[in-house]
Length: 458
Image (cartoon, rainbow, N blue to C red; front, side, top):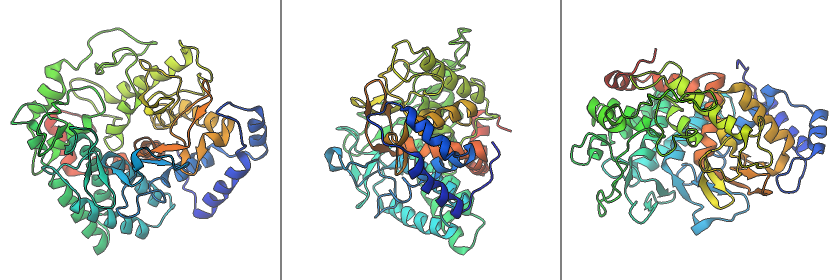
């Protein structure tokens, strides 16, 4: 999709047009009047694409936690927060957010100078925040940098969330490393943060697998060796790429790849599509779609292959299986179909669920289809137009599409989650220009890590 960059004046016009196009509706049920109104003030596909990127970007810009500049775990427009956690920031979501801010600079939503200032604030916060053998926790207090336990035994380092953060930080480093003195200093600060992550420590005494969690008082009690396939591939790539705390290749092949057991040798197809890899606990229909998003915000899957998979074909097929399940709609939910699809983790009628074909609760998460734009550009555009034109303002708010909705249950909360908003901005930009893929894959350590693990990517 070769779309020209819009300047601020055009963006402002498009945002104002939103007020004309959006029509109040009850619940999440589509109303014919919305389509009729949309025809009067039609937005082109290009303008709608930019509008969604712009509004969603604002989650990480205007909606960021003010002291740290990091991404809030959640933002509830209705101010209905669980456990009073409005100022809790998320490590992985912040990694997605810094990539979204780079998109904002490229699209001229903000200036380069504004972006640098925000990144300086954020990196100062991260340098002082709690770390556990270099890994940040899943959640932190954005005002103090102190860990907020994600669970009773999860009060220390989270290596997966840290990998999502480092993926984003490396993109920022690559973006600014050849800039002016201030930008080069920022890149150097990020380089020090990345080199401080002790990936090898998380082998839990030298085992040939990486562990998700460690804390000073709980030690390894979480007991979560990360074996594939799920959203965590990027963690192994970065661990192999580390210039200071690297891992040998056998940790990837014996741990993540289960000594080859990750490979799906079956010729069985689902809706006519084959998955190269066995998905953890989700063999039927491949599981939630974020598994094809989080690791691939920077890691470019287009030519990525190893002895186990062709990652582009795998991710495309995973997306098409998820969509076809919604079209088949075996549970007969309202408003499922070719223009309303996408099952992934997010807010739900029961607060939160890892929605997938195996855990289908009648809830569509817009991030699922929109973050799949590189894999299914036509199908994702079809879904985005339905969400925007047919469902209207009840699913679209100040920071883009709300996290989830169910026409079947007439349910939609004005709530957002960082981990769903970030991939929308980033993957839509990767579809447009490949910006984040180019930045991440240009890092020499990343290339060395991929080479070590036996990937081809050129």
